[in-house]
Length: 138
Image 1 (cartoon, rainbow, N blue to C red):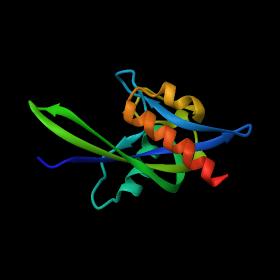
Image 2: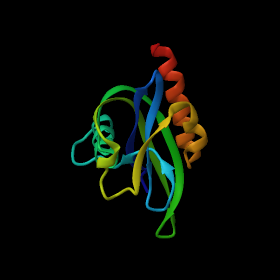
Image 3: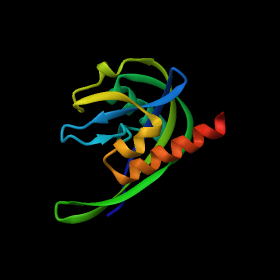
Image 4: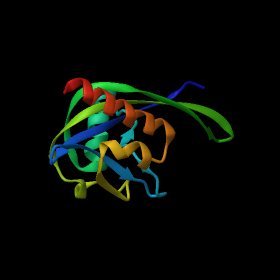
């Protein structure tokens, strides 16, 4: 079985000089990063930007690739490898109140707190990578 692929984004915005990132709360209560499958001929970066817009209500611009998260799950009794490529994005416009029906809510959290708030270990690692990448841009 070939790997399943998704793309997601870490949207960064500054509030009072501190970087914040957009997170989602899933219907099952997990605090996570917005992500999803590419549609049609979409590349990973375009899918990440679209998924961010749908799940958080935010328009954002691509800054850089942050990395991949790989994990296994069971589907129909078979193990399935999933690879999620995450990108760092800069907030352009929109409101987290405008998220779609796929998520329970969307909110801004301080980037420095994100590794402690995110539910999934791989996504906590992506938040740490975002902190490191932002430090390089300063």
